[in-house]
Image 1: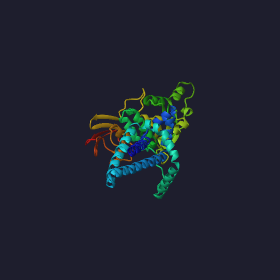
Image 2 (image 1 turned 90 degrees about the vertical axis):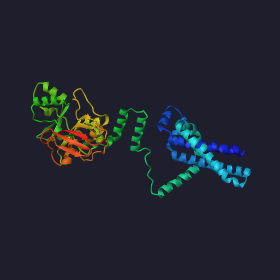
Image 3 (image 1 turned 90 degrees about the horizontal axis):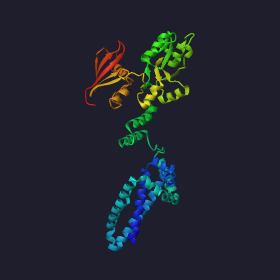
Image 4 (image 1 turned 45 degrees about the vertical axis):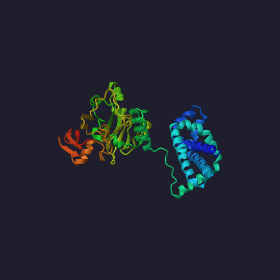
Length: 412
């Protein structure tokens, strides 16, 4: 009789251990899907997961009670059979039995079938939680008191952003997500951290028209750039007053009457370099515009930012039939490449599969980084060393860097 009771208590210990592991490691998304499909047990299991502190307290109460009871009965059984000197033997035997059959095996099995076991045990656990409610309240109160005593009452989020990124990497490695899909998810997570300073087109690269420019010159600029929109300035580029759309311009161009681009100007919006691209996207959606003027700390034009620039941070480079082949990054060999001076540092590091901290600079572009290293305008063909990079400069003109050949002097 004693042996049968001890065996029953071991089974209950195994159930408690398995239940604890199942509920702590189950996938809530799968449980929610099962609950949405009409499973009441899954809905109950999901509720327990969302109130796991109380469930864990109940499970630990049950597990400790059955383990203590089984050890006590085993001690009585051994002392009756073999005398008082067998207490140590009883302790050793029960430790091995509880460890193997009450902990290791049930927890291993429960982890492999976490959702199914959680659904199976949802009703019994809910009933046990109801029975032990007073004890749960007591121990929960003690826990809260201890937490306050040690000065920490802030609950951490269940999953941090870094942990979520790690999960994405894990499920990509397991083949659940394709590389392109996981890249999109990672981009979405980083989206809120990126500022306009990382993506805008600098003023030296702006293609714009002056308010009084000849209509034929504007037409030629549209043909040359193949842009759908062009900013319009008055007097100088620091005073951008609007944006003209290609469709509106050519509709006016073929129409009769006076050709005045002031009549087709769209209202610009002005943003700072420090503005988040997520906030800028919302602003563009609200104002129904596709281009924003980026202003510097003095109120002058720092550059422009388009809706396409922002979307590309999510989905990568967007090409259409009018785009020319991208030559901003050209791989020359296993340890060298040629890049545009306007290529962003982050894009360069990403394309060459380097750590995002491989280059320490406050500048946004490769050209800006080189100017920071030299603290002057480089000369044509000049070579710069910044381990592990060796750079050869090719100037576009006397003041502007055009392209840079970068060689790695050591293995990546």
